[in-house]
Length: 195
Image 1 (cartoon, one colour):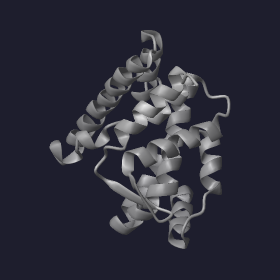
Image 2 (image 1 turned 90 degrees about the vertical axis):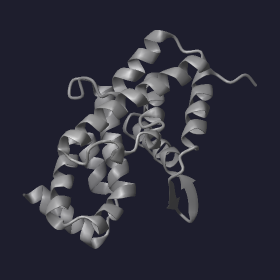
Image 3 (image 1 turned 45 degrees about the horizontal axis):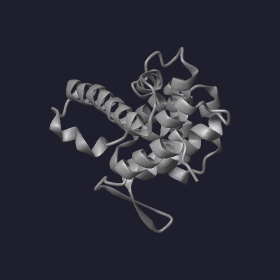
């Protein structure tokens, strides 16, 4: 059976992300972190947007491709360093996704559209970019928030939750309210949303 471009591109993205040396354990399985989060983001995007376009599917599976290759500590550990790191990381993900899409046979127009989604251009105006943002926030809340609770004080956690909530549109918020949280996690979310 001949694979279509989408299948080839997703396989290329997955193969690349499986090189991540960082591991996460989920349901007793040890998985390369960026591969795991890419698949989870893809699943959330399809749940939020069952009729997702091909470019949205591609962007969701490659949103943070190769993230481990530019570590946070390679930039100054202050706010300016963080913002610079995030900006350069977005460009890097977009470039890497574009290279792999080209290998899979995509035209420049599709590559450019995926780049715009990955770099979150016109986030509040572009429904596809907002869908990705909702998905990213939901991945964080579902799979990473519990670890964050162990590492940060309450004031910082409340700020993180409020920022996460502000990034989401209503469909994302509705899904976030349906997730299962620890008792402490739920208390923090209630405090953050009441504040």
